[in-house]
Length: 205
Image 1 (cartoon, rainbow, N blue to C red):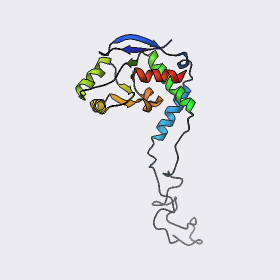
Image 2 (cartoon, rainbow, N blue to C red):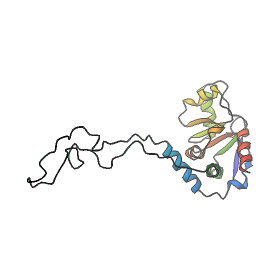
Image 3 (cartoon, rainbow, N blue to C red):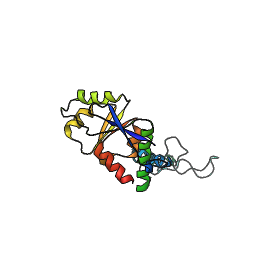
Image 4 (cartoon, rainbow, N blue to C red):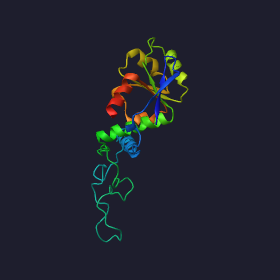
């Protein structure tokens, strides 16, 4: 059974907490669907091309309909001409949103947390706080984990802790209501406050 690593104040391993059985045996496709939906929602949707009706000019018929030996043409702004409109070009009114059910969202998050637990990169601490507000102290906390990058999850994020972690590129601090499967899968380790963890476990039952 997978287990989360409990850390003490010095960010050293103190014990382990077993994950509920509901976290195991989840189909990974749930995580795939959530990540796909999250990335689709982040698309800028700014690509646009002008069609033949959007390009200026082309009011005069290029040549006579008959007698020239060439194919008939009604406008220089047809897609077949240089400077003409784009046929079937991208438009910025496209909707990329993909629906994911609430149950799938929860399953996706639980699967991502279980994967971290199996890899030994899911940590639980009593409190995540940098009272000094200094980046040096926040970086010391991060370095003690010996991880490449870390997602810190607090129940309520205070200003000093936020400012302390803000300039550390390999860390990201969020409140518990911001935690989702995409962020959990995107970082190589997660540190969660005990209160947040207990809430996640109670919801999973």
